[in-house]
Structures are given as structure tokens and as C-alpha cells.
Image (cartoon, rainbow, N blue to C red; front, side):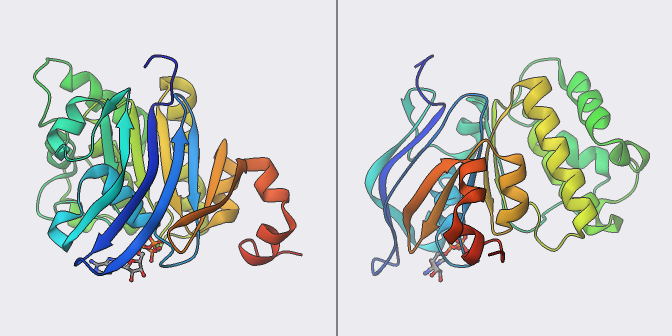
Length: 246
Ligand code: ATP
């Protein structure tokens, strides 16, 4: 397992309410130390893929009906979030869900819930180093943060579990372009400095392909194209349909 991909999704099908087949044999791999982008239009199945990995489908009456998901060599379909966190897999789901009435710092501490070690203070310092804005506002209620700062807070909370890999769903959603760049460049820094691996679902293909190492394009629940990010960004069809260029 040391040589294989860190995350491997093999031919999964996902069905909602036993009747809507939303993923139709989706396969992808995330190498250790990679930043892999999952691209596609609204409704293509990106969020469903993330939820399948994080085992969050059940509350929406969804289930993986075929295929397998492996993380670090072990089968993980069916494991819950705290088990995944202990294995080093954290996720940041679409939409921002900081606990509004808790302070920024307490929000971050919540992210360390699955840890039994004494390094939580070091992780807090690490989060503040990457997100100095959170340090400035650490005693403020998270509900008073701007949208971008809340996104940072939620990413910071995921970092508090000291993950090896983070699933990031639509980090650019609803954010001004400058903030999107700020958040993506922090992701790249974490990748370079800490060796953290990312799977990134992103409708904004232009930005995602500038920061990712590799990408998969999803249409109707299947991968229809994959390749190194630079090759995808140069692909005429992707340029026309997803980057608004020709
Ligand atoms: P978005 O960017 O809008 O999140 P996406 O690529 O992430 O798009 P999904 O959210 O995975 O797409 O949705 C894929 C398909 O599954 C869509 O057609 C959607 O309507 C459908 N879907 C999502 N959640 C459910 C659900 N709980 N029950 C039934 N169908 C669902």
C-alpha cells in the first residue's frame, strides 16, 4: 500500500432512493502528494463522489451499489467520519458550516475531536500560520466572519485532525476571485510544505486546473476525460465547454 495510490475509487455506482442512478461506474485515483481535481457541470456527480468516499450518502437515501473505495490500501466504504479522520482522511463539504455561535478557535478545536495525542496546540499554531486571518479573529464568533473567512475556518477545522488527505468540495463557491486565489494557494502550500494530498471537486475548472496536478472530467456520473492538469487545460473541447475559451 505504500506504493499504490492513496485513494482509489473503482467503478462505483451510486443510487439515490433506490431509483436514481447518479454515478455510473466512476473510477479515479489520487496519488500520494497529488492535487487531483474533479471537474464537471452542475449535477455531474462531483458532490456525490465526495459523499461516497466520506460515507455521507445514507442520510440522503443514497448508497454505493457497485464498486469499491480504497484508502491507503484498505477498503473504506462504510466507515464513518471519525474512523476516516483517525486514518488521516478529512473532508470539507460544500457550503460553509462553521458553528456560528462558537469562537473561531473553538471551531478549530472541534476538528481535533478524534485525536488522543497532545499535539493539538501545535496544530492550532500550524492553522494560524497558514491562515493568519483566523488568528486575528480567533476570539470572534465564527458566524460574524465573512464568507471567505468561514471557508478558511472550515478548512482549518479539517486540518486540526492532522490529515494526510483532504476532500475539498467546491471551495470556490460564492467567493470573490481574490479569495479563491488565496484559498487555492494556501492549499498548494499545504501540499508542498506538509505533503498533504487533495481531492478537489470544483465547478470552476479554470482555477482548479491551475492548481491541480491531475484532473478528471465527470459527465452524467462517469469520467469522460482525464489527464495532467496542463493537458486538460489545453484540450480544445475542455477549453470551449468548461473554460469558456476557444
Ligand atoms: P453540484 O456542483 O451542483 O454539487 P455535482 O456534480 O456535485 O453538482 P451532485 O450533487 O453529485 O452533482 O448531483 C448529481 C445528480 O444527483 C444530480 O442530478 C442531482 O440532482 C442528483 N441528486 C443529488 N442528491 C440527490 C438526492 N439526495 N436524491 C436524489 N437525487 C440526488
